[in-house]
Length: 168
Image (cartoon, rainbow, N blue to C red; front, side):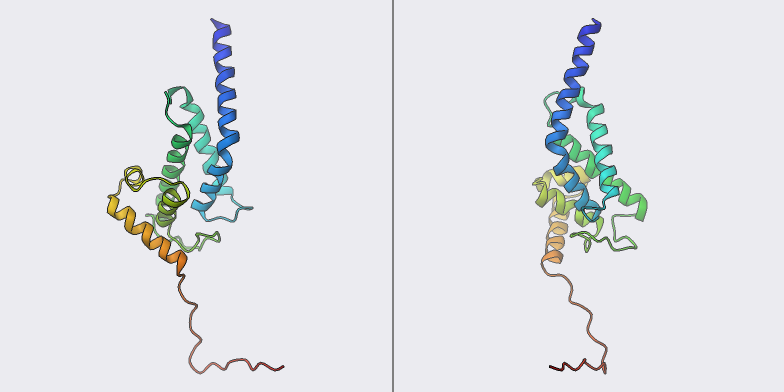
């Protein structure tokens, strides 16, 4: 009996290691996009990844044919949303502007954009995961995409400011 238990744990560990080897990079990239941190300085994204992988490992035997990547991504998204909600009171703009490529977006816009465009999650699935109507997810995704494609113009120079003379 003990040998069978040891064998089961060893097989479980090997399966999970193989999953992590294949999925951790993509999940870390998604977490980095969510947190809007720089790819080379992303402690919040790494913490999200660690928590997501730990949760997935803890429920590994209960997956029963479920996709472990989908489970890890769901936990990652839920954990990010919960953390953003607690830090800022809502999924709105934080006080400090993040530096990553999606830094111009609110946490909610980043979450929906990453789920929809980077991860390829259907609108219906994203809506169910976030507890939002499908139309709201569509609107937020469209707004976030427009913000990224057409960033706000730089502030205009004050009236009366002299332009620097260019001398050859």
